Image (cartoon, rainbow, N blue to C red; front, side, top):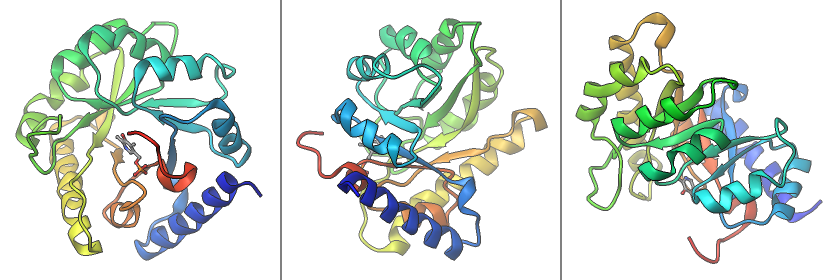
Length: 232
Ligand SMILES: *Cc1c(COP(=O)(O)O)cnc(C)c1O
């Protein structure tokens, strides 16, 4: 087995264990392989090990990689900061955008999503620890704007995403993920049945167990699949 294949199999074991600890089924949790800074050859190895969803956070780098793979074979998720002058490229090339942090970005993605493909799946990024260095809606802003975003025709509002501060103990790691889950429940009270959020994108290499215990449906894992990154 290659290192990447070994790593993926170790993560799958962790996912099964965490799901079982949470009383959940592992099939409701998507392992998103975060392939930023990785080569197409590394992505090929992950594909050979059964991964078909990849997360990228630099738009230009992502688009070069996406065009190197057959269309419709893989799902590409954008998880990085998105400037409003780059929304068209994002709307045309991805299946998911996890990092919508302003109403205006959601409106542009909706307008620019090609009508020939399914609506773009989006998550609102929440600045769950209210850090000045991180982007994202505050919880109050998300509550105030979710209804308007959910009505946009070119996108489908699926859920919430967050990148909490790093914390050491499992209990401490769970707290911000729990707040994100509670915010999703609150937003769902405002939405019609057909619009309910079903996605919590939370948990990375160092805290995915805590995220799964709090209801993560997508975990975004880079380092523990591909090894340490030279640069962020
Ligand atoms: C890089 C990145 C990840 C993956 O982090 P690892 O610690 O390498 O697993 C997850 N989410 C986002 C938004 C990232 O930018």
